[in-house]
Length: 178
Image (tube, rainbow, N blue to C red; front, side, top):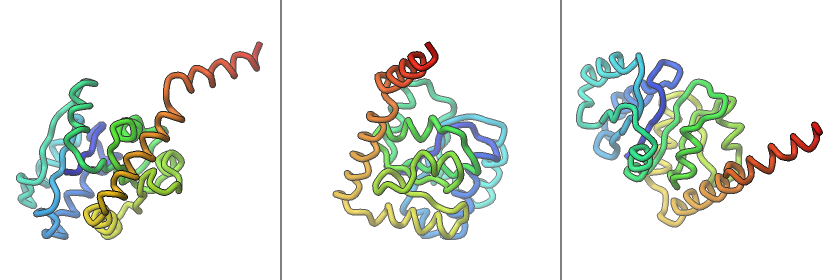
């Protein structure tokens, strides 16, 4: 199960996974897509889903509160973030904190967050063939390597984005000002 969360708009590029399933029908038997979020582009996505007969592969969850989002992340095996651009993605941070391996588009903001550290996440160019190759990489990943992704991402999140780290950084800024 592949999950995508966040606003449903053109910038987030949800449609690439629909185009992928249309172009490579064998993937329909291997993956399901769970979409959490709401937005103006949902109507267009539903039209594409109907056009390509993908109703059995796509499930919408709507906007979720914090507890429901944790439960949603617990259901998925891979977090997909196909956005055309980001500043700082809270959805990627939520995936890291939830031990969910990340496959994200190689664009500024996202690639700065994930970087090139092995097992922190996998970046793909925003085109269907590269997305297919990276999804197949995760499908064929050993359980051991899958667990490495989970551990590295969670450890990175706890080191860089926990409340104690944020407070220490803010205190340092305050000390420099005063």
